[in-house]
Length: 148
Image (cartoon, rainbow, N blue to C red):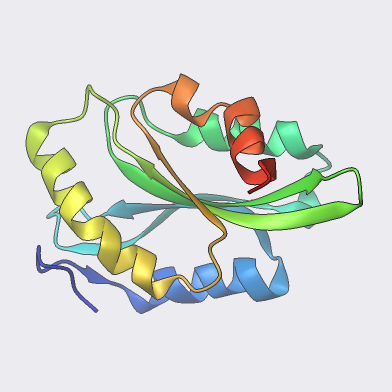
């Protein structure tokens, strides 16, 4: 699948996401464009839940630490939260485009986001961030628990 930018999503990116969604193999996945800005294929970083004994905010902090200050990324995070009526999970899709990223990279990232997003079934919420305050844990939790 490709976007209007002509960028495709590599099969390994999709299969890794499916492992997060169905097998709960990962807590988060960070996707990136390859060096030539032609394919979304690189899974930058992930956390294996069974190997890390972190609480929810610990995993979330690791995700934020992994987002580069000067480069665009996409991420999916498996958020577990308590509604007061029990625990829930929601897959959150992040589009990370810091103001300090290069103009070309931001343009290609923005025009390619839909190609990636369309391949990821089951996303419960989307977040776009340009600085850490926009992707803070409390901000995300408020967004997903807000009653409509």
